[in-house]
Image (cartoon, rainbow, N blue to C red):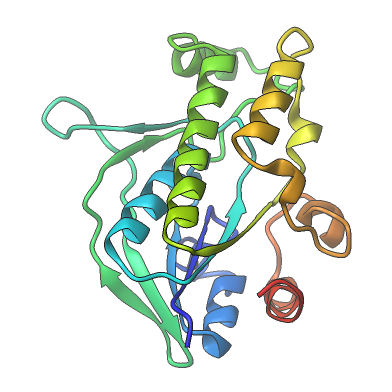
Length: 232
């Protein structure tokens, strides 16, 4: 039996959704026992970093990575000097549900669901983005995310781990900055292997489901079944 790791944001996170919906990761693990690394509000950098750590120190045969939208920002913090708002336990799921497999060892400051959108008009939100992003700039921020993803994929290759990547939304639909758009696309292709990402009946998840909201339990079952039958 393969050792499978499922990684992602709130769409994959059982703890974030446990009071409302049962996510695809829990349904998937009932038929395919899996480790789960997922955090509602976490971005590509944080998810990739935590998955890298776990794969480096454990025997994993297959990785399924369902990425979030691209403009979230994750800072790893030292509690001696900073306040954190997130930590991520590694879970293990099977037919009996899920439990904590390994307690969190790293602490994070996340932008959560508050992230850049082209249509933001609220001045307070604009101030937040200035604070969160100005220090490194949009291009540098995205480059750091793609570097973290590339490091994860390179590790998988070195350990002969099969990996499958998709996203809750098409990153190409989130390229709002015309002056750096081509550089962003180049990073996505060369570092993130975007051209090889899997889709759901030829569509990214939001178009497959027909909305941008979090999936219902029934839709999560649909996602799990699709991955089980068509991806692994």
